Length: 87
Image (cartoon, rainbow, N blue to C red; front, top):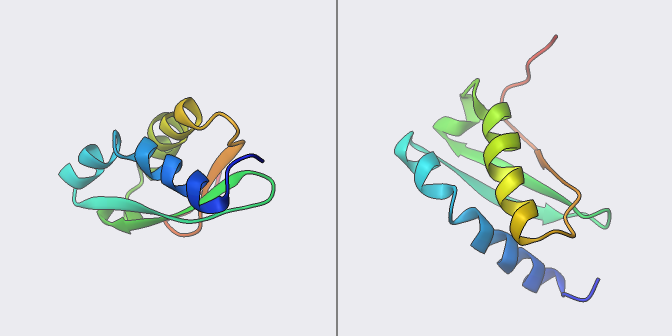
């Protein structure tokens, strides 16, 4: 990995800026908690996003897509909190 962890997180945060206004419009946000050695971004839902049933779709279609498009070395994004949907 050529970037330091701090530089990597800065790039991830920059990628999230395109998504944050949509989250804020619904009273929520997302916080980057860590980037694992496996290049998985761990995030924490904040505000209304924490309990929103749409957060799973927002994660895949919004957050993960935004991050991977700007930081292609990232393999995936996982939330450390939020609701779980049992199938």
